[in-house]
Image (tube, rainbow, N blue to C red):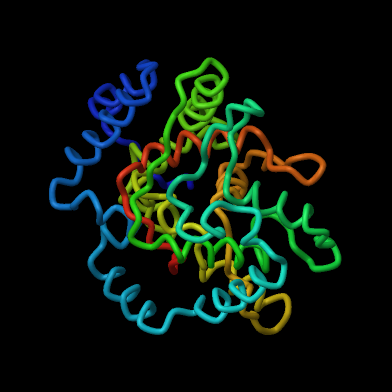
Length: 294
């Protein structure tokens, strides 16, 4: 992380109104305009392809991998678990083709609901022993079920609606603050890596653009699969999967900040708020998950 190239001061000043602007619509307009200015040759929808929209050589390698996707078996097994645990009866449209509308603000409870949060609540409601079945937020079988649900929304545009009520805006602004606030021993924010320095190198990795980030989650990461293979001797069909909030925790570790963990089997409200803001910033990008990432 230490070798991240710092962006020019002029660029930082140019984007600063995003932090000050209290209007979600205004934030979104400036966010899109920033990336358009920085990468005039990248189309809006191509941001859904992450780093592969920014690097031609890496894109060619990625396209070859996607010919025979390593996550395919895991998604199929996720579909089987979706059926086994009766997930369909917990969601509108039977849980299919709905990813693009999450997260959303639930007026009745005054809370933001994520797809994974509602999936876990569904499993418990259906009497599934999540500990026995080894289903937990972020990875493995649980992420595979979410990946299957996401796959049924491929091609649908992200359409997160920000309710302008006081409670909803408080959560939105909490997520926005988290995105731009520096943390950890390295004193980095989400924006430092994925806005100001996107397309640059951090160690051996190319930094992705925040625009379009969430469109391909849950993802199948080679890094996560290799880590499991190193421990077990080989990676199984569920290894390599991870949700967006698993990635948030990993990012915190990389800047040497403590990852946040929810209590009583729930997601941490800070990450829920971040996901609310972060996903809204990719409104209009087509869902293309699950997908392979570095």
